[in-house]
Image (cartoon, rainbow, N blue to C red; front, side, top):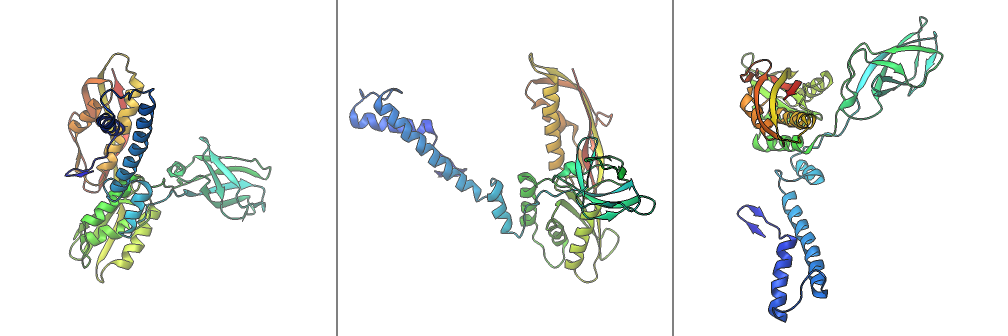
Length: 359
C-alpha cells in the first residue's frame, strides 16, 4: 500500500494474522488455526504466496525510482537520459619479447605476471634480426585486475624454445570492472540535477559523463582566463582516469564544445590516505575481521566523496570505525600521521593507503 513514505508491503506475519482473524469471525473463535491443523496449514500457504506477491509489487514500485532501482531496472532508467552502464573492459599493454631471430610469435601467445594475471598478444609479430619485438597484449579476463605495473609481466604461460623472455616496460591499463549500481546511479543523478545549456559548466560535466569509463567529473570554468574550461576525470572505480580515458573524453568534448572554447581534460590527482588507530574490542571479536570490515567501509566512503569533498574528516572516519560490529571504542587515530582532517586540493581524490588497526 502507498503512504507518504512510499510503498509499504504486507509481510507474511501481517497477512496470516489478518486471515486468521477473518477465519475466526466466519467459523467461530474455537476454530483450530495452529501450525499442524488443516486450516492453519492452508492459511499459512496462502499467506506465503500473498507475501511473495506483495514483495513483487514492492520491487516494481521501487524499480521506477533512480534512488532505489538496481541492476537491469537502473539500466533502463539510465537509458532515459542517454546513459549506459560501463561494462567490464580488458586491460591493454605492451611487452618486449626476446627470442630466436625471425621467429613468428603467433596471435594469442600468452604471458603472465607472478600473480597469474594472464595476457595474450593481439597480432602476429616476427622477431627482428636481434631477436626482439614489441607486441601489444591484452588481459585475458576483463576487469581492473588487469591493470598491472611496469616490470610485472615476466613469465611465459606455455614455454616455447624460440622465446627466451618477456617484460613490460610500461604499465598495462584500461581494465575496468562493470560499473556498480552506486556509481552508475550517481552519474544518472548528476546528469538529471545539472541540466546543460549553451555550453555551460553542466554541459561539460554531462559530456564527460557520457564517455564510457568516466565515473565522476569536475568542471572548472574560466580556470585559465576567459573562454577556458578544465575538466578533471575519475574512472568508474573512482581512480584517476587513465591516459586512454582522458584522450577519449577530450576527443568527445572537443566535438561537443562551443566554438571558441579552450578545453583542457586531465585525470584527477590522487592523494594516499594512511590510517592508524587503536581499538577496544568486544569479547570474542577478531581483530582481522574488524580490520577487513573497516577497510571496506573506508573504501566505500572514499569513493562516495571522490571529487566532491575538500577534505577527509577524521570525525567521519571515527564514526565509520564505531559502526563496525565488535568495536567498543578507539583512540590515537591518525590520518597521514596527524590527528586532524586531511585537506584535498580541488582536483585531488583520496585513495586508500596503509591501514593499521591495533588493540
